[in-house]
Image: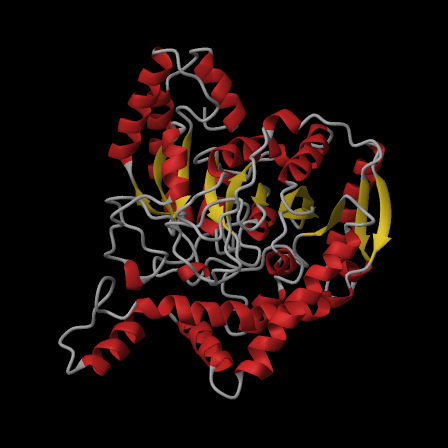
Length: 483
């Protein structure tokens, strides 16, 4: 059962080959047995899962149907879940039980999904390796000595190890797509505003976006269908009709114009990954796609701009965690200032403190114009580059990451080296565009991803291209040894 995709589970449940309760018990036992190797879960929710599975079986018995009815998933531990710990991977929120469900959680629950637990993540989603979590690093099931990517590494590792078929994740600068690439999954960052951020604990509000992580484009389409839609509780949610993503998977790629930016193939890219990307291009050409070289001239400025804007927003968002209303509170504070300092100093880890300080500095008097304002101007230039490119092509293709997954601890002493790994992913967040990573091969036994970017609200186009590619390749079917 654990090898089935979401689509296969939906068919199995519809054909009464097994019940949701039976499947849930199998996967919970598998998580208990195998997750100690991976550390991909922060919390397991066995009672809730079995309760939801029984309810889903009852709904099917009463004649209801739906691709997600009875499907087991997990939520990244920054989606608020009522009465369940929502820690954001931080000591600061280790004791926090959310009083309500995030919109994503409630929408998926209404569709009949079964929540197996909450997955591990970089603290407050800050990281590219899932090593900054208060609950310890997550291991990559393809090689337990390597990182699974971050910040959604717990969701990625759990799905890649076949502990469950799919999971929710979030992407602020590549945190869905990069873990997908590192663990041989398909991961989709939707257009900014396509999926509600209400109840999703914020890192950088203008960049964060929730999305699906699964093994196939078909499964991502199924999960995104349940997640997407307008939410009046979220002021950044966009009232745009949600298409039937699964129905659009089988469109022809004949004549599809694919742009390949020349800036993607510079000195920083592992040449073995470059070769795999070229192989992916050839596969898509066989399916009728037309390749065109394009340019994104301001891409070189994206990393410095991102690492001003994201920490600036984080310093503002995380100011609410002060030891007063909820979260970690220091023992016996001498006065209010001592309460603030020690609660935040004890509750936040090193990476979070680093980014808060960078952001506070960038927003401070005398530096706002020099750093934050300039970064926002670069952000606009990045967006303009994409708009010009999409006048010429339908999608943009390139590597998801410049290198395969690195060894645990290899970049801990050099944060900038880790930041540079986001070079291909952060531009989509700065511009608010949808992006998808899909499996493209292996380097030294470690998975590699190819990234697709599309114009606003064209998630269906990305899923269509990825699905057609996956019908003609088998990278996405490979399973890590031992799982």
